[in-house]
Length: 383
Image 1 (tube, rainbow, N blue to C red):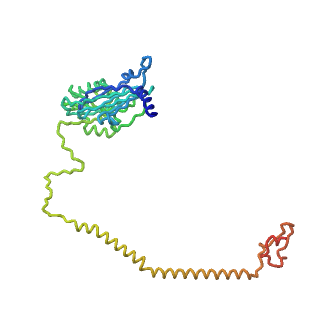
Image 2: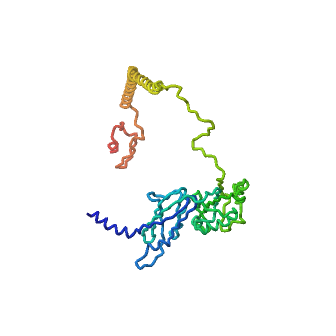
Image 3: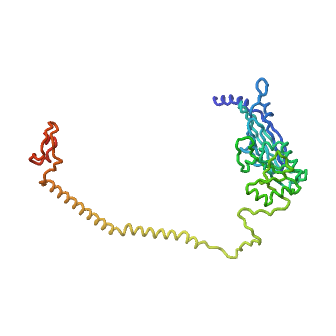
C-alpha cells in the first residue's frame, strides 16, 4: 500500500515536468544534404509561467534513434551553446523510415519536453552526381554553413566556375569529425567545415589544377596556393591543399576483399582420386610418443630415489663421523683452556687493580696487594 501511494504521488510530478509528445514528419532524399533546425524560439511556448508571459530560457537537446542510445551513422547533431539553436544534419544513404527522439531540457527551470521527428527517407529523384568535389572552408564553423543562405552564397560563385546551374550540396561535415584540432578560444579562430558538392558536368580546369604535382609540392612545403580566387567569394577562405575530387564517370575496378589474392586462371579443386586418408599413424605419434617419454622419466626418477639409497646412507654416515670428530676436538680444546686458566700464576695487570677507595678517597698502591684479588669482588676489594 505504501509503495502504491508513493507511485500515485510521483505521477503528477512527472506529468508536470514532461510535455506532450509531438510528432514532426520530414522527407529527406538519399544522396542530398538534409538540415533540420531545432529552434529554441519554437520551444519557448512549451514553458509558460503562470501569468502567460514567455521567458527566454536556454535549452539543451538530447537526440537519439528510437530504441537506441545514439543517432544513425549518417545523421549528426550540433549546438554551439544552450542559447543557440541546434541542428540535425546529414546525407541519408538508403531509403526507409527512421524515428528520432528529441528531449528538450530547460536549463533554468529543469523542465523537460519531448517530441519525435519521423524521417521518411526517399530515393534519389535525380541522377546521382558523377563528379564530386569536397572543399575545406577554414573561416567557418559547421553551424554557420548549415543555414540555406550560407550554402547558397557558396554555390553561386562555384556555379560560375563549374559553368553549370545543376550543382547540389551533398554533405557538410565539421573538420573536427575528420581529425581536425579544436581551435583556441580566441576571436577569429574557427573549427573549419568540409562541404561536398556534386554535379553531372565534369570538373572545370580550375579544380583539376588543385591536383597537379606542382600544387601538391607547394602544399608539402607548407605553402598555401591561391586558385580560382577571381571567382570565389571573399567570405570563404578555402584551403586548396585539402580539395578532393571524385570522378565516378569511369567504372573503377572492383576492390579486393581483405585477405583475398588475385588469380587470373580458373581454380580447379583437387579430386578425390587420391583415396582415403588414414590418421592412425598421426594418432600414435601424437599420443603414444609423449606417454612413452613420460614413462621413461618416471622410471629414471624411481631408480634415483630408491636404488641409490645405499650410497646416500654411506655419505650420511661419513658426514656424521666428521661432525663427531669436530665436536670432540672442540670439547678437548675447551677443557684444555679451562685448565690453563685455573692454574695460571701470572700477576694481574695493573690496569685492572683498584687505584683508590671510592668511599674514603684513600689511594692505595697496586703493588701493596699481597695476593691476587682477581677472584675477589670489586666492592670487597675497595673496603
